[in-house]
Amino acid sequence: MLNIINDPSSELLSYVKDDPVRPEIPVEFRVTKNKFIGALVEDKPLAMICVALLDYVPTTVDELVEETGEKVAVFYTVWSYAPGSAAKLVFDVVDYIKEQYPTVTRFVTLSPKTEMARKFHHKNGAFTLSDNESSVNYEYYV
Image 1 (spheres, rainbow, N blue to C red):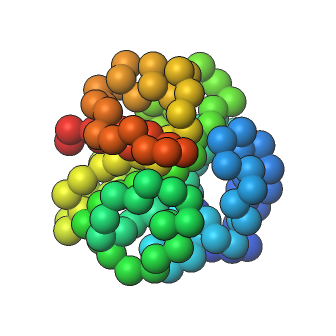
Image 2: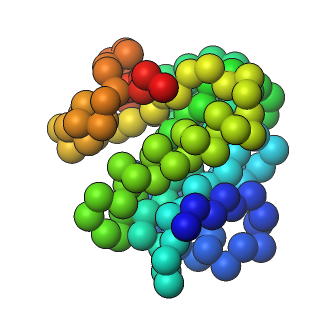
């Protein structure tokens, strides 16, 4: 079941400590005005993803600070506890965003420059949008 976490008191936020991609980002930052966490949960989380809604495609984590916008959904970290769960979560969150934020027209990532990230996103239908100094943006056709 998809859970959207935007309440700083949610018990599911305790799992943010497991984020292998951007562990340095504080929990409070992940659940502010235009940011939320999606979690695929059965008895416990199967996968989690952090999302920022912006008006542009960021190329660095620092650019996620902006707190306005609903044109671009930016997936800036994702991790999984069960095989296949991250991919399912990405598409469940896309469906949620399309329903709740109809002004969002683009779905992109702010990904680390790793082969694992490239394979994950390309396997799930994304294309490389830009290769930046410290990150890669992948974009999903949806």
